[in-house]
Image (cartoon, rainbow, N blue to C red):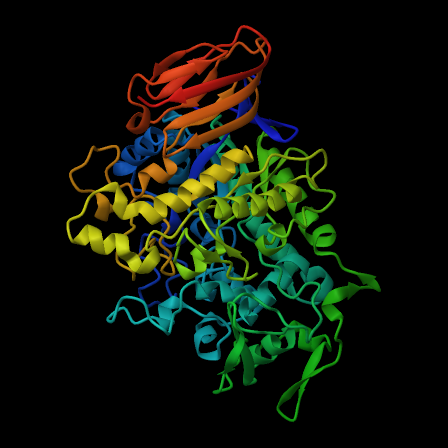
Length: 639
């Protein structure tokens, strides 16, 4: 049974005082969409049924849940970032919680503990909601701010697979490019919503819903849903904390009205463009492509569709921020979103820090020992910009890291990789790995801005399994079953985990999806992403615990999951099968060092060398108890 986890400085510790490495997965990728009706994003939808959906069965049906949890434990994972969405809890309407889902989610947490898995709760979102091209918030939040989400696709206010993609054709389609969903953060549906969610009191003070400013109204309901989940899982010691909110957007906060909002691909928006389009004004925007700059233009909302409900209007236009003259938008207050009462706004200080504190207060009212896994805008975190002052104590830096080039191009070629944003060329696996270390170190720097420093846990990291034109799937369909069909994925994962080990990071890999399929239309069931380490299509006459695994040798690898002292160094060479760790041993800690050694690599009798002795190997866990203090090396060699 998994137990409590705490933090000490920049490390995780367990009840015995040991230095703990959390190595886990996100479970699961399709928790973003309902089970009933099936919400996989390749299926067309008008979302008219958004109040009556059910997420019970995400991430797995209870009848099959233990099989999946046992497999994750067998592969060496000790932690789950367990997804759910605000919509899953409160889809029926404000304050109306789905009791069946809350019961289900608590049972998943309980069973995870039985399998020795720590859990932290992830209220997940991407691009706000399913109605705006992602997942997360309930549909009624759009009604609250006065928007008609059925108008998002025809106006261009959001880009949705459910509307762009033709399931009859299948495969990849130009109408829905790879990773194009992320551009929704720059489009007006998201731009307006995130501004109101975090800063409505400052920038839309007259927008009142049920007697409360829109910011207060939305956040009250979000934290109400969080509290409902917290109350349901408070008795479980293996639940170690709550994520603040996955990859939050920032809307127009801090941006000049005509400043370009640049992402790596797609249309370049300004706040003025977004607000004008939302009110029915046609816009012609430059389009950027990775590594190529501006490659053309795109005209949106040629039919002049307003996304505001009848009788509602843009609160910023009403406040005199902008207007329409002779059919064109005009700027009236260029710096409106940059200052309040003559004071320049700071996103972290003014909006994120209070949000973090409220999350901590909400869940710690229920259970004071819970950790807070904090996230800021991922584009800010990867630059090492850090967390705001005034964040709550005992907070974890849960920023995300991906090889962005491999993620957005679905290609990995270890001989040479050109970074999709910087253009930097890295030749050879070691150079790529060194680049990973450099990028992850910037995330660690972000965590070090928290008072006293904080542990960094990569809340997401992983690879697209349909990379290199889905070569592995073609070879699989042709009958090949050797590990070499996953060579590219295993190489990418191996380099990623090498970097994680070099920096002694904890991590939860994205992801394990029970409904995953090799079909490029389906993938993880959400916007054609395909990063699941498991797929039913790979279940083909192999050992039941490994059945369905993809590139297992890339992620199923040895690591120190608990050190009797402080872990100083660990490394694993996939080619030689040699694992090494160095620990500053503390014999006053009576619980032993525990090292996960996958049987698929080390059999039942590996050679163990080092100062601390040979230990005892049982159920893939090597336990070594040190009797003397000081730096000691453990070396394990596969035989």
